[in-house]
Image 1 (spheres, rainbow, N blue to C red):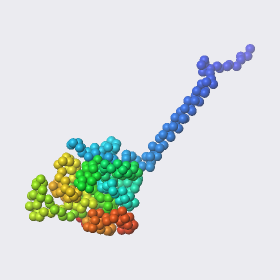
Image 2: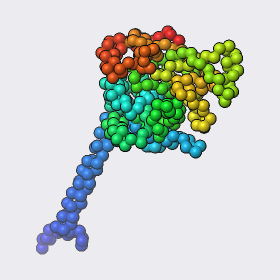
Image 3: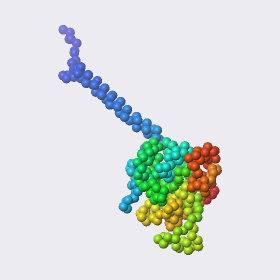
Image 4: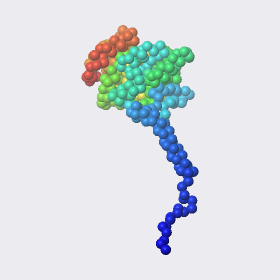
Length: 345
């Protein structure tokens, strides 16, 4: 009798069922949904990195606390607290009545957006921020906070913004700048000068034999015969006259070694004078730093080598800076000529 065809049956439990098939389909759908959600979540992050060029994503505007009760300066809002490495940091000193000046600056040599600041830093090695204190006027503080939110280009010092306290603000600036930036030079600039960042970069990049250097357009000022300043007396006798060299206030630079010495001292160990430039000059004299005189930092008009332009001696900066800044920027000699190194030391 011929054998019947063999039939092969699946073992018990291996038979496909509609329930198992549906469960597999649901699992695949769930995995697909999770993948899609993950992609939606990560795409904005990747886009942010692509647009920023992997640059620093922390806010550029930070609040820095002035030293109280012997405590060191503390920076709030700078992430892990690491100092940002640059060749030079430029703090543009500004005030609550200078919104128009800042607007003019952002239309000329000071970039008006985060990307512009980053590009300028990459091209010159210089980082730029506006430096301002605080006020008890709520309206002015509210306006400042709106400007900070829009442009993100400030360092906010926890110190009262007053003209009579400019020496204190200047010291607070150098301490804050040193805490936030690892720079070879720290530059103080006013908000009413026309500056060429590329030429300033060339000036700061020059090789120097003195680690403690004070760069500025120098002038002579009086040595004060204050009995509390013991170190002035031998200097006056040595020089035979009561004048000393110091930089004009609108712009000057201090090397990192000089600023580190200022940072190391307690606030109450500094003698403050009414004029900020005289105060800094006195400290530099006491520290016996090298004075580097450069008149390209106080040019009265744009030339092929001018670094900073302002109306010396008529005004402490540009006369009518909001208007003059825009006029200068239209000149090819100010904004469009090739950078040439100056031989003026």
